[in-house]
Image 1 (cartoon, rainbow, N blue to C red):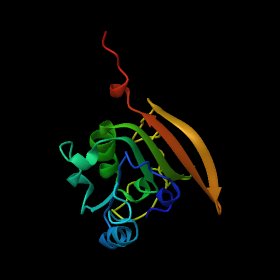
Image 2 (cartoon, rainbow, N blue to C red; image 1 turned 180 degrees about the vertical axis):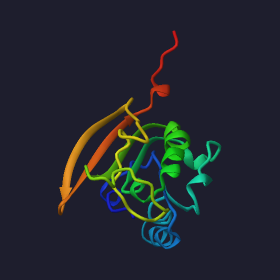
Image 3 (tube, rainbow, N blue to C red; image 1 turned 90 degrees about the vertical axis):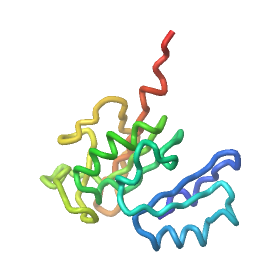
Length: 157
């Protein structure tokens, strides 16, 4: 929904690509921040996460920002994200609602809500993921993780 990105100045020599499953969100963003006003911004609607296959050019970049998205995905889609989306980026900032209650990482239908932590089962993404920020909105804790993709940093001498 571009709430954070509208506060960030993306240098003209870099590009920003926004992707959402809600078509009306993309239409609004194109109207407000489209190429006529910001030539280095692109917005794309997808129907399902599986449209972002490894061959899709939308799926390449230095930094992936995922804010409050995974909390609405069923676990199979989060596994798809970990296996097929995350590996295509050098870095990622991943923000999710967190809670220690029994709903953490429970499976849901697409569009529903529950707290997510990728370091807990069933995801167990422990390597290359660092908790960098905790903050509270209302009575809800949010956690921001920094991911560094090891394939971009392996030096083969």
